[in-house]
Amino acid sequence: MSNGADRGSGHRPATAEARTLLQVLAALLAACLVALGATAPAHAAPGDDLVKVFLVPDPAQTGGQLATLQSIAAATLGDTARSGEIFDLNRGLAQKDGGALNAPDAPLHPGWILRLPQDAAGPDVRLARDTGARAAAAPPAAGRQASTMFTIPLAAAVAVLGAILLALITAGIVGRRKVRTWYRAVVRGVHRLGEPMRRKRRLMQRRATGRRFAADVESVRRAYGTLAEFGPTRQRPEKPVHALRVDGTGVTVWLAAPDTADAPWTNIDGTRWRRPASAVGRPTGREDTGTTTQASTGAACLVRAGTDDADEPVFVDLSRLDGVLSVSGDQGVARDVVQNLLAEIARTRPDTPVTVLRGVDGAPPLTVPAGLRQLPRVEAPAATAPATGRGTLRAGGARRPVRGLVVVTGTPGEREAAELAALCGPGGAGWTGLVCGEADGAHWRWHTDAGGRVEIPVLDMRLTVPA
Image 1 (cartoon, rainbow, N blue to C red):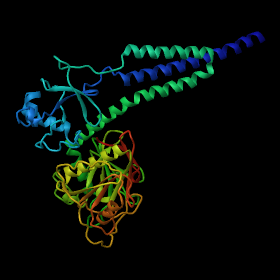
Image 2: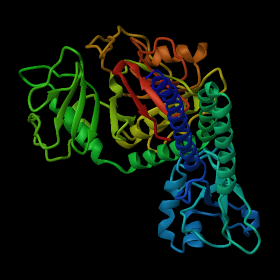
Image 3: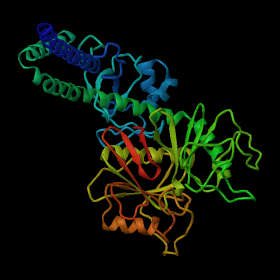
Image 4: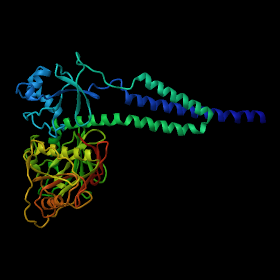
């Protein structure tokens, strides 16, 4: 009996060790396959690494003939009517001379690099690598138009990973206690190698979101229609809606903590209320024919700040900023946030006046969309008594119509801070400030990260920003 017990006790640890080693190797193999998928995707889209571009020529080289979007479309796509596609691909993208294409009829500058649709062809079409802000053009090889994407050869990657697996197996035999430590180190290294590709994919997704926002008017109509349900009536005052989420199955609203909503609205948590798309909201007292506009919802100024984890647009009401929004964190993503808010206002409130101030950190100016009216420095009137009103979800703030926008590109200096206070502060001119950086006295403060996300603490939400 004792011999049998000894044999059984000696067999169980060996089996457990073998099982642990197999689990470690299986997890490592899965991590390696994920890394291979991120490094050399078998079904990568043609535009993920290389894009087709057109280099705007100097008129001196074309006999004084100026290039236009129509002429480029005719030369590369064979159809002048497709010039709109070229404009959509290049709208607002910074060029190397600091300019940008913001209108279909805007003049093109020599040396600009314009993205083209993937079916573009011709002697002037080039292939370029996407650097994030603009494409870096490279002349095509003589006699051909095509090129191949640069990827890590799959055979080399498999050989390297096979060597790593063999080393880990040997390490498991020689020193089992070190296997887990080595495994974690390898996984961390694989994760770091795949991060650039993951960031690039996120950037492509954020750009696609920006194009979707520009073409989507239905979600804006539904958002303003929902806002009208909470407007004032003879029986009760307005219930402030600070944010909305519009999707195919219904609408979610963020209300102040003391407020409630009647059926068919149901409470999700303390401040969020949900109504399914099949349910009909409270009559607004107006002849609503599906064309509800901001004229019927008072001072509201709804803008899509980004998308949530389900890729659905989330609106915030800029009229409840109570003066100034400070967007800090990653400087590039903070600029994307403010640039997107300007584009949203240009689509829903065209001709809104905008003045742009430079911060003390020397950040380049933002591109003001064509739909807004850019002004030089604005003389602020004499200060008046600050208005009072109902608070936001966590801090008191008066509602303020968006009469004009003061955009500060970077942290405000002493002069810019004084202008912000005069135009946007309590008792000021009633304008709304958007600051790419830290701003003292800002009522709302958003924080961005390098992954393209923005955190809005006052609403307990984190969104992905369009690019």
